[in-house]
Length: 456
Ligand SMILES: Nc1nc2c(ncn2[C@@H]2O[C@H](COP(=O)(O)OP(=O)(O)O)[C@@H](O)[C@H]2O)c(=O)[nH]1
Ligand SMILES: [Mg+2]
Image 1: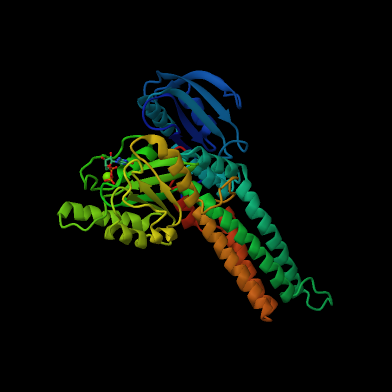
Image 2: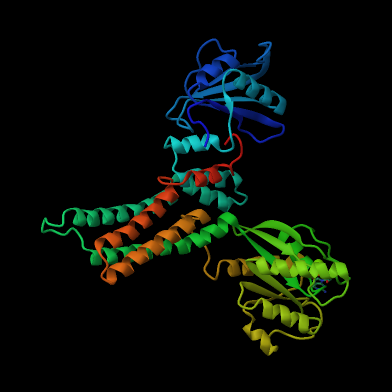
């Protein structure tokens, strides 16, 4: 990757004007560079805000009145000497301060490089570094909570607890191999297999709860589908809380996909309003219908909207059939109008899962729809506490650990040698260590940190 022994600089606050803007300098040269870009005569006192001026690198005239804070390593964010300069949030001034710092010997930081250094210097493990990114980019309070807990170490602790048990198991099995003649077996392959199986079950439980964590971290897509004019756009708008999609009496109004992300019980849900699905020969509408079907195909859940004031037709049944077996909410709309049919007496509707009857001309049904949709997304059991794991990279690696542990236990049960069982246990350990960053390939590190913004 990049050098880790030089001094880096970047604007840490978002682009554009703001109340305050912060330039962050980290590395062995931080304090020396601060001395050259600031007008303070004395060295900055550690962890104290010092009121001073930032100087123009060319004519040494004051650029801005700033507060400078020196965080000596190793007890700083990056683990190195850090100086933060808070000026007025003017992009021009902040850029000039950065230029002054580079003229004084700093290098422009790459995205995520401050956090990468924190990781490399052991201030954070990889899971916590990833949590920093999740916290910064969270859009719902619940995402922020999960990320903050992980930054505080919940996920690290959960993985660490598994790794300790596994480490102990591997150590005992290795000792049995290394000292076969001592007359004392620390543990034999068969017993190790039994322990591996129970550990696999613990990993599995963690994966199950992590799937729900993932829903909070990554959110999901929900498509609103149905025939033209049943009230899809009305439902979409009410869930969004704004008049986002055009609602009209004419059939075939919505032609392209309209999307909006909403906070549904802490889960960032991207709702997709679609064109009414019907058989049509009109070119633009037909394309809309194709896009609608594609959106339905990729969505995590589908809301199928039906109109109670008109008899169900072949298009309705086709959609119900296509979406059967998927996480789905069926909304039977226009209950204020005279009913042409009723879900209660329509025998084929019995197998449709949750059905909600609504009137969507006012907002009165929104709460009920949100509640029903949340239930569909959570798979029946509400996500109450904050799951320890939520990141798909961690979930994949936990899966790899679980498979290796199951292989170890199956091999041991089949009478395999200590060496063979050990190989699978080692593989499980490697997977856990890749999560925490103890043993993570550089390419993976690069991929993780390049998602960060510059200055973080
Ligand atoms: N009476 C009645 N009309 C509704 C209801 N929901 C939607 N509408 C009307 O039905 C028409 C089509 O609604 P829209 O949301 O555009 O349906 P879409 O084509 O499925 O997106 C509009 O004129 C809406 O005002 C309802 O519950 N009752
Ligand atoms: Mg519409």
